[in-house]
Length: 371
Image (cartoon, rainbow, N blue to C red; front, side, top):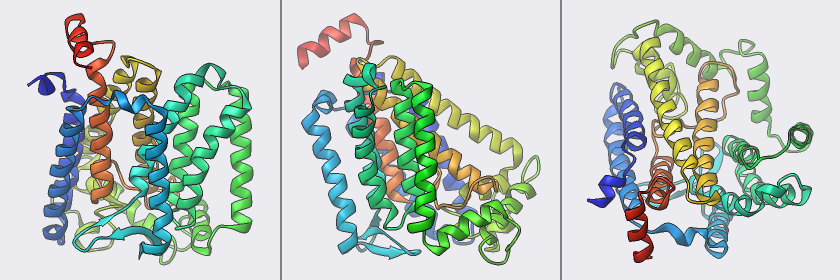
C-alpha cells in the first residue's frame, strides 16, 4: 500500500490517458484489429514495469559503476544490431524475437540519461569547462554514431537533442551554448557532404520545399498536413478519419499517429491531448524540483526533456514544420520498446520520490532505517 500512497498519480494518469488516446485512434483504423490488441498488451507490460520499479530502492543507481555498466550494455546492444539486427524500412534497428521485436535505441536513451545525470550531478558547477562538455559529448556521440549508421536518423537527432537539453539544465553559459550550436551546424554540413544517404537528403529538401514532389518524397508530409487540417474544430469522429482509414496516410499507427488523432478529434481534442502532455511534463519537472540530490533532479529533467523532444519532432513533422524522421509520439504511437521504456522511466522517477525532499520526516527516518 505504501507504493500506491507514494505514487504520483497525476504523472502516471497522464501517461495512461495518452496511451488510451493512441489505443482508441488505432482501433478506429481498418487494421485496428491488429494494432490495438498488441498495443494493449504493451501498455499492460509497461504498467507492470512501472510498479515493479516503483517498489525498488534505487539508491544503487547513484553509483558510477552501475550507470556506466548500463550504458556499456546499451552500447553493446546497438553494436550487436549490425550483426544480428533485422532491417525494417531500410534501417537495421530491430532484434526480431519471433512474435515481437525490440528496438535497443529506446533503452539506450534511458542509459544515456542515467550516465549524463550521474556525470553532471557532481560537475554542474564546472559545466563551463570544455573538458566536461567533451566528456559528456563523447557519451552522447558514441550512441549517436551507432544510431546514425543503422541508419536511424530520427533517434540520432533525439540523442543529440537530449544531450543538449541536459547540458542546458546543468547550467551551461549562453556563450558556450552558441559555440555548441555553431559546432552542430558545422557537423550537419559535414554529414550532408560525407554521410547523409540520398533518401535522408531528399527528406530535408522536401522539408524546405514540401509541395515540390507531393507524389514522391513529399507524399507523407502532404497527406499528414491534409489529415490534421481536415479535422476542423471537432474532428470527424472516432473511426471516421478518411486519410487513415482509406490508407492515404502511411504509418498512421506510428509516425503519424498525431495526424490520425487530429483528424478524428479535431482542434479541441488536440488541445486536450497537448494539455495532458503538459501535465505529464509538469509533474516530471516538479519531481525534479523535489529530488533528493542533483542526480535525481537531473534524471527527472532528462526524462522530461526526452519526452518533450520526441513530442516536438513528432508533431512538427506531422504538421509539416519539420522533416519526416520516423519519431514516435511518447506513450501514444504503436510499438512495445518505446512504450515499456517510457513507463520504466516514469517508474524510476516515481521510485525516487520515496527519498525526495517532499517525503515527511517520519517517512524519511523509516526509509533511512530500511536502507
